[in-house]
Every structure is written in C-alpha cells, then in structure tokens.
Amino acid sequence: MSQESYQWLVDRQKADEDKGETKVEISQEGIELRLERLAFGQYAAVDMAYIDTAAPFKLVPEDSSHGKSDHTISFQIALSGRANGTLPGLGEFVLDSQWGLITDFSEGKAEFIVDPAEPIRTLGGTLSVSQIQALFAGDGYDAELERITTQRGAFRSFLITPAMRNIVTNALATPLIGPLRRLYLEGTVLQLFALIFQNELNEPVSGEVLLTQAQANRRSIELAANLLVKDLACPPNLLELSQATGMSARKLSIGFKELYDATIVDFLTNQRLQTARDFISDQPDYPLKALANDIGYNHVSNFTSAFKRKFGITPAAYAKSVSK
Image 1 (cartoon, one colour):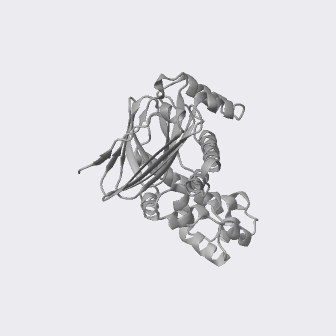
Image 2 (image 1 turned 90 degrees about the horizontal axis):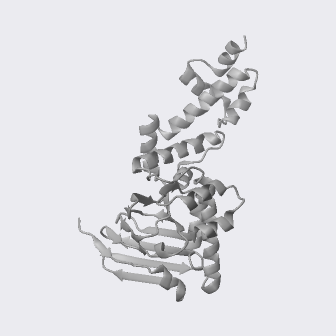
C-alpha cells in the first residue's frame, strides 16, 4: 500500500529561542493535517495534532535535545484514531484511544504512521526531569522519579483513564486564545503528567517494551470487567464501558466472549449470582429482598429465578441449607 509522507522536523532549541511556537497546516486531496507546538520554557512544551488521511501517512518528528544538559520526558495521548511507529534505539509502539505513550526519547527521528481508518487527534506534553522533580517532589513519586533520572532509554504504554481523556478533550476544544491559552495548556500538561505518574508509573519502566495490541486489548477488557463488578447494583452500560476503556461496543462484546466465554450481560449476571451465593453462605439470615436490590435486581422473583437457573436451587432453600 502506498504511503503519503511528510517530513516535519521540529528544532526544539530554535523554537524555544524564537517565539516558542510552531504550526504546520496542510489541506489538500487525501490529507488534512494540523500540527501545533507551544514551548513554555527551555524544555517544557505541549504539542497537538489532527490528521485525517486517505492512505497511511508517515510523520517524522525530530528531537534535537540530546545535546542539552537535561533530558526530557514526553507523553502522547490520542482521543481518536491510531498510529504505530518506532523510536530510535527503543523499538516499536502503538498509539490509540486506549493506550498512551510515555518516553524519554531525546535523540534522532521518530516515525509515526497514521492509520487512515479514522482521523487521529492527539495531545502531547514534554518536561525535563528536573522540572518534573521540582513539581512533584514529595507527592509520592520520588522512587519513580529516581528511576527516570538515572536510567535512560525507557518507554512504555499507559492506560488512558476517563479523567485523562476528559482533560485532553477540554484542552483541544478550549476557546481561549493568546497568553491565556498558553497558560491553560501548560496547566493541562502538568495535570496529565501528575495523572500518568499517579496511575501508571509506580513500577520500573527501564527496559520495558510496549504491550502488544492483543495484550492492550486484554487489559481493556479486564478493566471493563472490573468496572462492571465494582457496583453490581448500578453497573455502567455498554456506552459508558466504551468511553471508559476507549474500545468500541463491538470490540468489547467480542473481547468478553473471547476472554470470559460469555456475553457482557451473561458475565454480569454470573458475577451477581456468584456474589449472592457467597453472601448467603456468610449471612444466611440476610433478607433476600435486600440482597436482590444490593446486586441489581429490582424484583426478588427475578433474582430467585436466575439463582435457581444457575445453581439448581432457590436462594431461600440455599440459605436454609447453609444455616443448619
């Protein structure tokens, strides 16, 4: 398959020393592209991208910060679309609406190949390690910051949480302009770095490789399963699960069948009934109507019928048998 390619080389030092802003816009047959980068200082920056392409599109950003005294950490989050590529000396990666990328890549030209199936919308941020240490010192990140400081050549994927997705959505849609926009986006970068450290960077990252797509999908399905059982009385619906995991409803349904050999509804029903059985075993005198409500059944008769179908005995009879 043919590839459309465009070489976008960002000289970070020049951008910082000049006006701290880089913009690239292309609108022609087969490709619509908008790239923007705002520098907040010698090392800190935010970059945003929108690419809608009719064919696989190669984007080649260059990092020239390797000659500086301080190395940087960068992240990328995609709200939609998908890209894959390579980082020099580090390996291959996948960037999509489920999984973000964080790295200390700081030398040479990376390669992003954007999938034409859906427009990709991304937001990324960069800070130096010393800036991160100064901002987050004493917040429980010290051990992780030490690993980042002393070990180079790391990159990994992280799960994009609903909180991260909401922050990026608001940032890309902000109506602010001028200095206020710059200040707002700088705060966005700091918030996202804090969430990434808090949620994902509590394990060593050096030497890790990115998850394969199959592994990433499995973790998203497991996340959806955990969200379902977290509140059996009022579990998220399919749309809410899709928004929380970044997976389409169709992929979620297929994934549950492959991983749990059950539909999402059957999985939830099984979890409710197993929870009820375990609870009755511990507290056989607990009112069945209250238990039914606790696990999401509005009518005790429906709970009784479902329990008997699964276990071959009514919950009342089971409670009587375990109370002897």
